[in-house]
Length: 286
Image 1 (cartoon, one colour):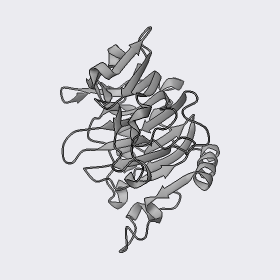
Image 2: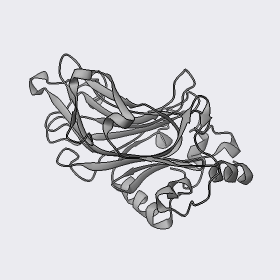
Image 3: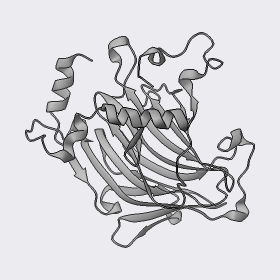
């Protein structure tokens, strides 16, 4: 991306921040009777049983933002279940940024699955184990999406970055506004050990718990962004607009990737026998 265009995109941002009641920003888009909001609306749960799972989505669309969600995953034998947190636009050439948590049998680790779609093309999967039990307590999962980079983080530790490499012809999500989605559903045909381990419905209901969903983003409505020229980006709450990984966070990401990554499309030569995707050749990209 040319420097002038990047500056133009950034300086025209007016950030909308939100961390209020669930119903201010979201609604249940399926399995309504399997989703429950608690107390002041800052906590909720999704439930999966043989009848249904559940999901919710944001009322608004966003074009760039930083989204934090605190999540406690399904406990015990969660094989065959998938808990998701992602951003997505619509249509055959959609953009998408994914966190998916693939359940497992008791005592076996969850698989954290990540992917990035741009103009309908994905196939950029990277998967991780976590360095803690994600079912014992709440942990914070973050998607940072600005014109320069997409960063996936867990408890503030970056695990993956996807840089804007449009300068060498690699599409980057920057033109399509996206909504925020989350869901809990059954996918035992592929989720655990490639579908070899099925959901044990005697362990149902399966419950994922949420709290403190924070949105710092530019909203999109009626074909236009809410972000207008505005000064005052020294505010620390807006720092995501400029954010990139510094050397310290790169070091943390290297630690995660050295110890906890279990699949990287950029190392799957069998899948790409005629050459890895171009971004895989970029130094420090993955």
